[in-house]
Length: 309
Ligand code: ADP
Ligand code: MG
Image (cartoon, rainbow, N blue to C red; front, side, top):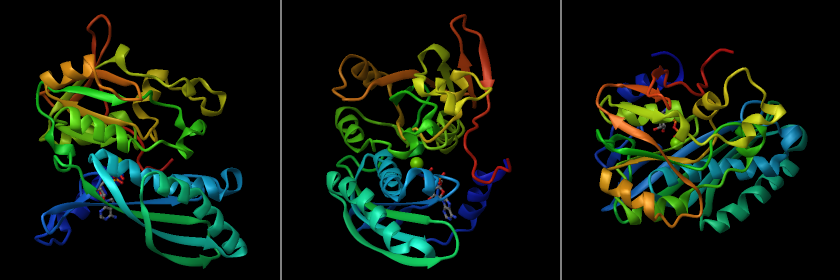
C-alpha cells in the first residue's frame, strides 16, 4: 500500500491515545466519550487549486463546501452536528472580503443543520486560500455507525447517483444527515461511510476495517450520474468506472443484514434514491459482476491526495 492511505496507516500506528477516545484514526469521525454521550469529531481541509478554484468559484461556494463536507462525515456515522470551528489562511491581498464571503456561504448551511459556529482561527499570508473546518457532533440513539461493522451476506446500498461531480456538483453537496438518521431509525446499519474518494476506494475502507472482507457489485445496479457525460468532465474512462472512482459524490454507502435489506427494498421513506448495488462476501477483493455473471476484480482505487499526477 502506498500513498495517502499508507501514510495514514503509519500515523495511526504511532498515534498517542487517551482512555476517553473510544475510536481514533480510521473512520469518518473519531468518537470521544463525553461522559457517557459519544461525541463525534471530524476535520477537513480545503485548498485553493486542489478542492476549489477561488477565482472561478468564489469564496461563498468555498464556505458552503467546507462545512458541507464535514457534515457529510457526521452523516456517515449517523450523527447530528453541534459545533463548527473554522480555521482560515486568507490571501493577504483581499483578506476581509474573502472572509465575509466564506461566512456568507457557511452560515445558511449552519442554520439549516443547527450547527453553532463556535470558534476557529484567522490568518493572512501571501499564499492561496486554505480553509479547515472541524466539526463536533453527537451520535444518534443507536450509537455511531462505524466502517468496521460489515458482515458476510450484508447487502450494500448507496444513496444517489455517482460520478462526474467535478463538473460542479462537488461544490454544493447536500449533506445526508437527515437521510442517515431516517435509515438508522428504520434498520440496523452495520457499516457506513460517505463517498468522498470514490465508491471503490470508500467501500474498500469498509471492507478493510471490517476485517478484510470482499464485495461483489452488480455493474448494472451502480447508479451513474448524468454529469459523467458533461464535456467539462470528459475522460477516457467508462461511465461505470467514473461512478466507481471519480469521488466527491458525498453520498452514503452502507451495508445491512438480509432482513433490513428486504425492508429497505420495499419501504425506505427517503427523499433521495436508494440503490442496492451488491453484497459483502468473505474472500477479500472488490468484484464487478456483469449481466452474464462474468466477474472482474477491480482495484479499490479512488482519489489519493498523495498520488503524483
Ligand atoms: P474522510 O475522507 O472521511 O474525511 P480521510 O480519508 O480524510 O477520511 O481520513 C481517514 C482517517 O484518517 C480519518 O479517521 C482521519 O481523521 C484520519 N487522518 C487523516 N489525516 C490524518 C493526520 N494527518 N493525522 C491524524 N489522523 C489523520
Ligand atoms: Mg468520510
